[in-house]
Amino acid sequence: MTKEDSSKFNKELDKIRLSSFDVDEAVGAFSQLCNEYLPKYPRFLKGLLEKAKYYSAHIRYPEKIRKHIYTTNAVESINSIIEKTRMKSGGYFQVPEVLEINIYLQRENFKRGKWKNGVTSY
Image (cartoon, rainbow, N blue to C red; front, side, top):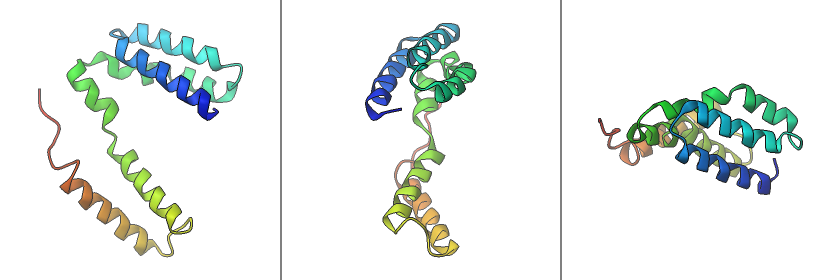
């Protein structure tokens, strides 16, 4: 997707995520949104449409729990930081030990910061 289309798509997706209280309603709205962009991006959106029910599974949970499901993705966060570091160092890590040290440091930073307090129990 182009940056412009991606931005519009994500804004609409956020609206669906925030306004849907029923899984079937969310899947229907998601499918409708995907169908709008299907002519421009058929291969990408066919894959999304096949998995629409999985993308809306969090709707089954109460709002207090939902926000943790779709905002807390520790693995993606760490991978993103490692990827940025890799790109800054010339596109690769010279030896596996450098990658291992980087992963260790990122994990320790999360323990002191974001992961300091666990998810609130309800």
